[in-house]
Length: 211
Image (cartoon, rainbow, N blue to C red; front, top):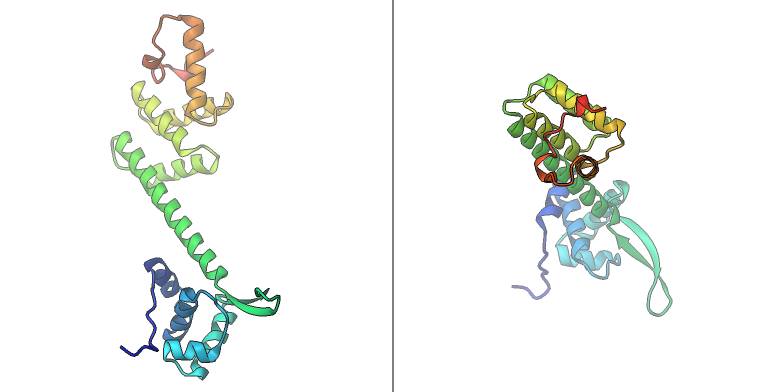
């Protein structure tokens, strides 16, 4: 292999993000170069030699990437105090982080719906999903919704209407998560009968009949 040729490492996440942005091959190559280049200073001859692109192609691709705000130039001082221009891919990396965060959130949401449906006992309809989404938009956490579903199952009323009423009662009491529910039930158990095992009562209480 020619000693002037350079190997580039392309991570899958980087490849997916650049493909999502519909870049040209030359734009991708230039972007890949700076993703691998430690110094990240712009030297058209150096980039051209490393990528096997003509200097004109490098300049054109670099300019296009700047227009798309995937590359920015930031002035920095080197070790000698001299002002130099550094190439930054921060916008691209932030885009990757945002994309991955959205994917994670979507995955967790799909997992939540799967858990709900599994414990609900039958397939969710469009109207069911609409109500569940309304709960989420109202500020109920996924944990609290699943807890209310568990409460409904223990009380033998596994309906969305009952779950909705339980959530409403919990909201009135200021519960933010299941820990608040647990603390409330533990206090009631201690007040009513200290000998009762709290763990057996947590989800067997009828919230709708509470004084």
